[in-house]
Image (cartoon, rainbow, N blue to C red; front, side, top):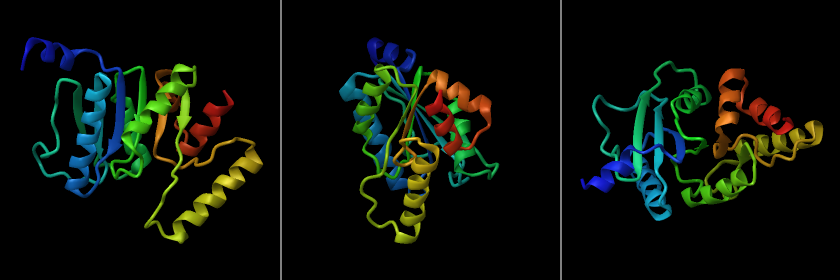
Length: 196
């Protein structure tokens, strides 16, 4: 490793990305490569926090775990069995950047879409939510209740959120600290943060 690479890998991350482990190791390898390509193509120092919420990782370092000049990885065990949201909170609490993005590793969301989220953050937004556009392979029995919940949420709460259950969210450090201190559910966090 050259001196400049060593300096890049140790500098404060400009963005933290938090995800959980996908049970398919190949999916994780593709996701990590996509994040690494994103970091190097944007010249961003990234921190990738992966929380093993399934307890599925064998002892030792996973084959897809690696650090590079622009990417620092942290893999956390979360064997408490308290669900994906609590695991994501564990990941959020372990981040160090001023802005962070949560995303699923299944590539249902494109990593380069983070640029759109960062643009909104630069405009002063503390919370930016994505929404799932193409949900091929997702049964209607899962899509319909989600759609209904979001419609009711918009009508009853007056909050213009298209997909309150989306795993792709951007939070400023201020919003992340609020979420960590509040103990709210992910849906409640979005509503409270929107109202602030």
